[in-house]
Each structure stands twice: as C-alpha cells, then as structure tokens.
Image 1 (cartoon, rainbow, N blue to C red):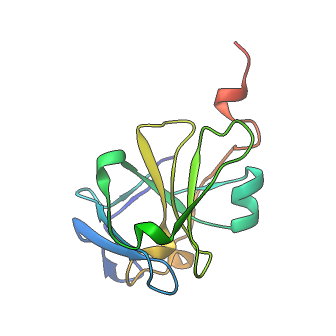
Image 2 (cartoon, one colour):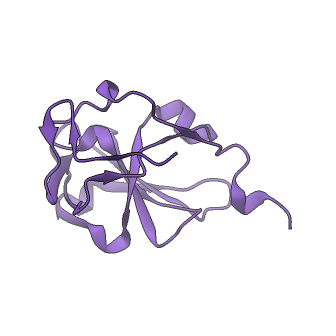
Length: 136
C-alpha cells in the first residue's frame, strides 16, 4: 500500500515545502509536486528507535537552504545508507536510502506546519529483513 498526501492535518503540502529541524539550524526545501509520497515507517534498528515517519523524494528533490555545516552523518551496518541529523538539536532530517540510493527519505515531522501523528494507516516497511540482505 502506497500513501500519497496533498495535505496533512489541514496543512496543504506545497510543491516546494520547507522542512526544519527542531532548533531551526537546518532548513531544507523539498520538491513535492505530487504531495508527500510513499509515507511509511520502518522497523530497522535505527528507525524503531527514532520513531520517524518518512517519505521519499529523488536526490534532486532536496535542497539544503541553511545549516549544511550543522548536519552530521551517521552510518551503520553496511554503511550504504546516509542518515543526517542536526548537530545542535539531534533531529533526524533526511537520509539517502540504502534500498534506493537515487532517493532521499525525509522526516515528515520536519515539514513546516505538519503533524504526521494525525495520519492514520501508515504502513511499516520490513527493515529488519532488508531487501538488500536477502540472498539470491
């Protein structure tokens, strides 16, 4: 099941929507011409702990407006995915996906004016049994 949203809790999703960390040190512009697409949770060890609801954009769909120097990179396991966090407030903003390196996943809670906890029926992807780990 793929969910695409053009509004979340009454907030319309703009084609170019601003996203920020908690303290405002990092500001990102997301290109969302079709709204928030492929909204989901993941149950891998990192996502379970951070509790984020994420969606995807192509690599060209994220522009860092402010605070690139404040972003810290975290990688684990295969070190293929690149997870970015604000070094000031610790909020996860986005990551380059392991399962699709041509996309960024972004933290829906960072979208200006959005409360992702108001969205029901969000699917959970199986990150414990990651598709890249399945032997062929």
